[in-house]
Length: 258
Image (cartoon, rainbow, N blue to C red):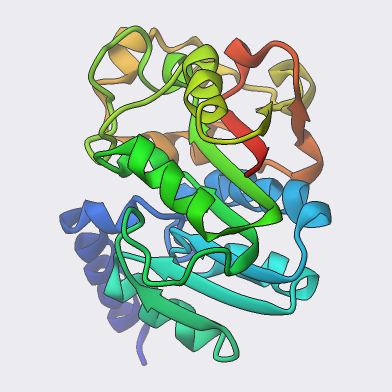
């Protein structure tokens, strides 16, 4: 294939991506703007991996990247997602794992079927968050482990009532998230995910200095591309999880028991 043909093929690929921006809602290895999002996502899976055991269910499994990390920690794995395209790609990458297309609020499994349940970046998408949590509780065994993550409302959307992300129904502050979960589960511990100080990992903090009222006018996938341009690549070791200073975290991760 000639160089011009390769360039034309790449151009068509990028046109397809930006004309179908909804496919960028889940981390995608084929999209350079998700470079750091993928690192942050993998860090979450590695953070909870030591707690995972037995029969594992991931709700919102996307393209299956998280199950690559968690599969060795469990005996049986099932991934659930609404997107048939995501599930098809996940099945190709992980043929030994079962994938099911289903809505997170009405999961097609019998009660108390799973030792471990993961639901990262899902709850902000569902219409009825209480019903969603009750469904996770229904599926968990008595001593089960449940991990749920969601973006910090203050970081993701500032003081806006309506989320900036068009795919989010709602977002939470840390007290709101804790209160919601504590009504559903007997044990809840929330961690905040952040990166080590920008000065120590980046020579250019341009993205951090953009006023929120401007930054939120820029589509998220464009923000991802800008971030890749102005920042050095994020590393797993740059990601940290702490129980303090939750308001400064970009993502909350709750470790729960039924």
